[in-house]
Length: 368
Figure 1: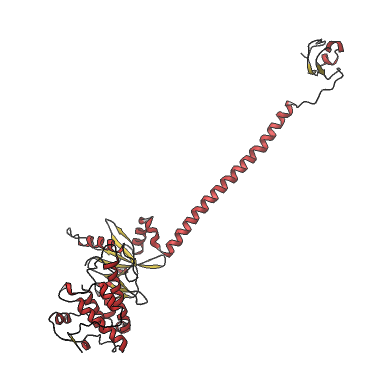
Figure 2: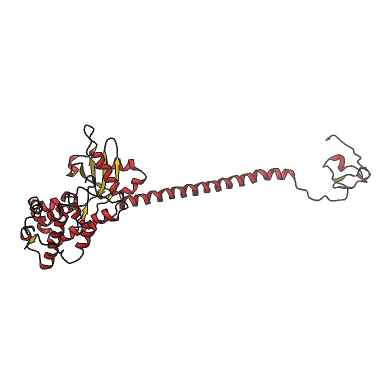
């Protein structure tokens, strides 16, 4: 309508601002009169300021330019915080696990047995003989260092020609030690049953075995009467615990000087629960410093035995108080090797006898 020159919109009930065109600007009042509320141009009425769509259109890009970067920044911050807390939680878990592993490497046994298996194989260089510290009837014991701590790894001998005795020994030892918690019984950390290697992992006891100590004069002398009495009492407590205090009684069946191990403080620990000697024999071996052999024959033949011939001659005679305890140990040992199993005391009775400072009344076969 740019070519429009004249206009007459009177009597039409129109309202609002007149268009900004020459025809409306030059129109006489009669041409725009009698309307409801026209304004602007030559009507004499000023129009209220109306928001311009043009302005809104101009503001929209500005709003978008402000909102989008702000929203993007907030999403970036949220993403960064989420990643931070995720990594922090993961780092904390790894740190806790690492700390637990340093304190006890076999904590990880519960969640990654393969890792432990591979670490042991690597540490022992695929069970190289230079790491061997002992050999038994059912397995070879290796010394392994993991996380700056030493452990004893008992590798079970592979069965030959269908021989299942070693496997049975392996299962018996696991079954026994997983139920035992006692200060005088070796601690089992874990085990691995694998087609290539089967082994058990124990605490490493640096003091060696009772047999090794008795066979070396220097150590045997250091293993004085007081320590020998304490060792016998410790072993008795361990056996009493297994026989009477476990949910199901556990019988060792292979208790010997090779299976009694010492830590650096001369504390005795019973080990090797794979198979199944008389406790009295071991006690006599500790007192005599050697296997009692011929002495057992004399006991069973009811011959008189001189106490002076029994104590380890490498040690000086014990003082009076210790001598009484040594004599008590000998008497208890004799009762434990009685021909009739029904005449032997229980380990609980033995423990009670050794815990009091008195000797048993049955001494009619021992002459001083």
